[in-house]
Length: 540
Image (cartoon, rainbow, N blue to C red):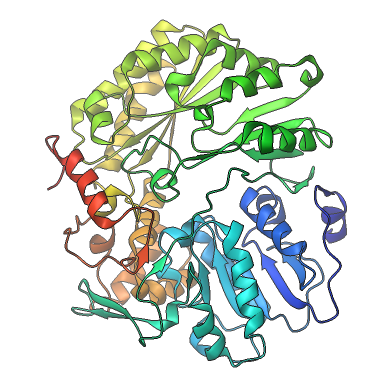
C-alpha cells in the first residue's frame, strides 16, 4: 500500500541527496495521506525541507509512512484542523514519544508544529509542542533549521532557549501563565527569564512568488490537481475573518514573474488546475489570467477556483469556468441583511448578489453556492428573514440555476476584531429556522454542525488549562457531549464552557495569545470592533 501511494507521485522539484551527517527529520501530517498530500501548505514545507542536503526528511501520515529514521532529531506537524490534535497524540505514542513536553528528555526529538490553527492560537496545544512556528514558512523554516544546527549537540533546554531567540519561533514552556483563580481569567503571561523575548511576532513573507504544488498525484483527495496560490490574505477585512486578519497584508503573485511560469510547469504534468486564495478574483491581473487560460491550447484543462468575491462574478468568468469543466461557483455573502453585512464590514450590495447569479447562469454554470453565517453579533430575527428573502429573490431572478446555501455559526477567532465576542446560544435554532424556510422552496440548505462550532470556539479561544480536558475527551470520544462531561469532571479546576465559548470578554482582559503578536495591534482591532458596535445590538 505504502509504495503504491508514493510511487504514484509526480514530483515538481528535485529532492537533495542528504549529506552523511544530515539531520534526521520526520515531517508529519496528522491525517490520512489523501488529505495531507492535498494540503498545499504541507506540500510546500515538505519540499522546502527536502531540497536541503543537511536534512534527511521522511514523511509520516496516519495511514502510511516513508522509512523513518531510528533516532529522529526533529519531528514536525502541519496542523490545519483543530481536532487533528487527537491524531498528533496517536502518532507521538506510536513513535514512543511522550505527549507532554515536560516528560521528554535529550533522547527525544524536538517536536514542532506550524499551520493556521497554531499561528492563530497555539495555547490549548502548548503542552505538547516543544516549538511552534508562527506565520509564513518561507523564511521561518530556514531560520529554524539554521538555528537548530548551531545547537544541535547541546542539551534540550539549551536548544529551546536558543531557538526562542529566533523571530517567529515560540517555545511555550519558556512562558509562564498566571490566573486570577483556577477557573477565572488570565492574570499575566510572561517569559520565565529575562533572556527570553517577552513577545513573539508572527512572521510575514512579503515576496511576490507565492506557493504552488510540489507534487501531483492521482491519490490526492483532489485527484491530479496542481494548485497555485494566486493571492494571500484578503483586502476586504470582514471583522470575523481569520483568513484576512491573521495573514495581512494582502499579497498577490507576480503575473509574469511567478504565476504564469508556475501554471505552465503544472500543466505539463496534469490538466487539472486549482487557483487558491481567500479572494482569487481580486488579483489585479485576474482578467489577464482568464484570457491566458482561455487560449485554445488549454481547452482540455479542468479549472477550479477556491473563492470568488461576489461583485467580481462576470459573464466572462462564468464562461471560462463552464468551458473548463466547472459547473458551479461559490460566493460568500454572510447574510441577506444589509445591516449585518455592514456590521461585519462586508462591502456588498443586494444587487451584486443577484447579478452574480444572473452572470453565473448566462455564462453557462448550472449552480451557485452561497456561504452565509448565523449568530453574527447584533443579528436579530428580521436579519434571518432578509437571508430567506435574498435566496428567494435570486431563485426568482435566475430560474433554473441550482441554489445552495451553506451556513455556519459565527465563531470568534484570535487576532480579529470579534475575538472578544462569544458564540450566540440561539445559533442552532437559527440554523433550523433557515432550513425550515428554504427547503420547501427547493433551495438546498447545508448547515455546518452547531456542536462542531462550539468545539471550534473552545479551541480557538482556549488557554493552556484545556490540556487535561483534551486528554479526557480523547478517552470519551470527540463529541460535544464528551467535552461537556470533561468540563463537569474538572469543575472548579478550569473555567466552564460558557467562559470560553459564549461569554463576551472585556477589552482589558488578558487574552491567551496576548504575548503572540499578530499583524495588527490590539488597539487597531478594538477600533475595528468599535466601528461594528456603532450598529445597534452589537455587544459593547
